[in-house]
Image (tube, rainbow, N blue to C red; front, side, top):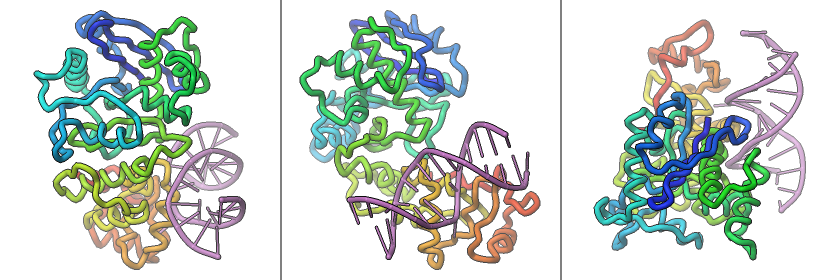
Length: 330
DNA sequence: TCCGTGACGCGAT
DNA sequence: GATCGCGCCACGG
């Protein structure tokens, strides 16, 4: 289940629920958080929430600026958005309402996604305007904002009431973005420390950051290096990220191709991970990367024996994944 | 460019 | 389970 929430101080909160087929199953407005809370508590643990509001105040990672890394990156792509101040107290009321919402969701067991593995049971920050741009590939032509929004959602969201206003559309857009997140069709902007903004993966390239963005950030997490305002290693390729990740799998642990793909920032590129590893087989501990069922790789020929020697537990000819799977960088 | 190629993953049978 | 089909995607020729 995918829940999008549009936060506004004056007009209240709009909530949209999408099922796995992206059909609107619920669309409502709530006056405030107290009104919404009992409804939120009814969603199952596998729900993914998407909130249209900043998840955290700025921490000053962008040198000399107040706004967050995500806002800095998006502005470079010509997408304007709210600037989040350094302190919660100086934030506008709708932002404070948003912070409270994230806090509530966290207490209910839906923490904010901070990099790493995408999936359900999380809360993501979204920015509907950005999602519309990703979906349509344009920056809104002559159409009015509502028309543009509705058109952007038409192909992807089913059962949207014709009378839906901008806030409702934004909530639906947020829910759709949650769907793309769980289904591996997303990109992230920003820095995990200052909040990641998730958007559907654009059909047309918005800018270089979209493709190199996530992994860079994943690498920053994994190396434990201090977060940088703007990732400096522009050149790091998917292959480099894969190599870096594989080389970090500890002795006695394994990862799946899919795991590596997710950590490298491209959840659906498991297959490509295989080809990258093959190209660099001699420089990597590639016996520690197994497939989804735990079958060891074809190279090196003694992969299984090596894993046993490292203490990895087996179930027949397959690695017992649940007990030996590496949890990933940080 | 464009196109074929896998050390994948998932759902259906 | 075991297989199969099909979608995915970074690479390289």
